Image (cartoon, rainbow, N blue to C red; front, side, top):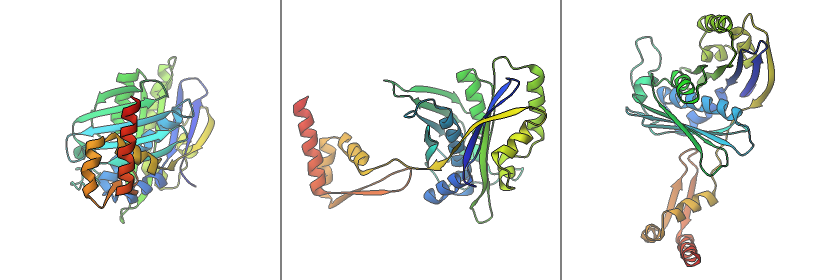
Amino acid sequence: MGDYIIRGIEEGGNFRFFIATTTELVEGLRKIHNATPTSIAALGRTATATAIMGYMLKNEKDKISLQIKGENEIKTIIAISNSECEVKGYISNPAVDIPLREDGKLDVGGAVGPGMMILVRDMGLKEPYIGQSELVTSEIGEDLANYFVRSEQQPSAVALGVLVDRDYSIKGAGGYIIQVMPDAEEEAISKLEQNLSKVDPISKMISEGLAPEDIMNKVFEGFETKIMDRKDVSLKCDCSREKMESIMISLGEEELKSMLDEKEVEIVCHFCNEKYVFEKPELNSMIDEIGRQKSVD
């Protein structure tokens, strides 16, 4: 079936919604980072949310990043998406291993701990839009709903889930963001809340073979809905040798000269683990480039 997101509206004008299946995306991230179940649940939820918010971007070159800064075992989670829902993700401690919660579920909140959620929208302007809010449960979904209300005054229902199989592969992953429209009726909101309280966790529904359209029918039972469009989701890193070279140059002349003692310098992309090797002649060329930039300045 492949990963994709549907975007739609409730015909009464009360809600707009985005529903995603991201099992292949999260499985790809798990393999890249060799992540434990708790780590991939944390990264997978963050990446799923970022893919959905990537779909919300208006312009082709816009990008969005969602960062989780925790104080426990997981210090950093970053997921980045463009408007085509091409996503990459990084987690600072993919090997974290802590006991399950009392209810038998993965303890993402315990692994992340107190901290901040930071959202950055790069829309091609001089400065990106940056919003942030404190983590309330550190389970990611509730934190994003809290962010939408506090930072963007947008009441939203957010569900994000990752179900890990016994062999650690991803059995089901996905999420939805349902946004309440300004003139939404209280009766409709109450009815939706009742529906949401009855549906299974989204990762369970996806693991049982339900597509985003099926989940929509369950969540919006008793409502008239309309799907506006859909978009595929994919795992894609945009790193390149040229970008890594720019990073090397940004380190400065002295730092590069200190590397000349090495036979070669290896840089690894945090997002996809691709390795880039630079040898002495290339380092010398970078040092020369810095010298030329100085002379122009």
